[in-house]
Length: 426
Image (cartoon, rainbow, N blue to C red; front, side):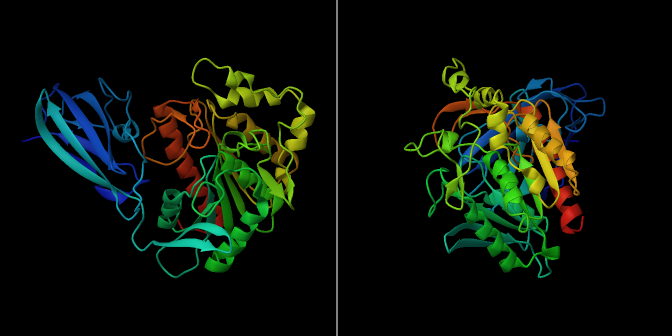
């Protein structure tokens, strides 16, 4: 029997793991399996060498590589271990990500197979938003029945997170990816971003989709996670639930995404035309030295921890999360190179529990993961990079294996959270 791949499912949404089995092999043979995925005009690739089992097969759910781009058993290791250039997703999300698998013994190719990761499910529709100063993209699920809704907010890289919104809509949630800087029609920098802009976005989303049970959650990553908690605390009548990916418990200044004219210690957010107090203001211990004077790749978290030495300053900058009027999900990494999101999440959880928060407070932490807890079953190899706004080389922390585990686990927790509280059928 010739060697052949069995891939299940061959076509499905990107958040579905695949079972990959290569059968018809000589028992004990060393087989190299490679995975190649075109992404935004660039080819991403990973490979690993396996020993065929006594049953003449290699099963990625069962077998660890002998050597290669990842170690240990990982059903989707040939995806999350991929490296390459460019963006992870195509500009047109209606085009699935197509991965080709090839197997070879020595120099001879013995089998090939393909599978597709769908980014935008059947019936999902995309609606660009550019009105009354709001800029973003709304993705609506298939069908005319009411759906719970969610607002998606990016972090200090800015832009509009269409892939995440498209996946939410593919799972039955009306999703608005709202930009607030770093996209056409928006400011270039995060500095002095008014919170009222997001209140307007929430009102627009509620009126546009008339969500199931009037449920609108806010989900944000990094600075977006800080922002999601801020919005829940500032506009509790508009926010039904908060999902904070690697969030902060404190208000931060502009930092890496700041307008150079205002500096990284200038304000990030405003309310009623006034800048919010942030944790670097009048802080006796805060110092950028551990970051600025680093001889290796910089970790922003090293500087962030210096601010914690002034409890009074941190108290002034603390986000009053006890004002949030709904459930809260916190997702963090214990090796976060941007800021200590595990400590920040613990502070948020403790603040809510101490005040008897009447809604669910769930914290999921991956101790070995870094700051880049992003998207399920995509490459997790970009750990050190140049910040897209400041251009400074930093490390986000974690390892590809740990970050990929957090990517999948965070999405599973987020989807279950919205299903529980938004009335979304499983």
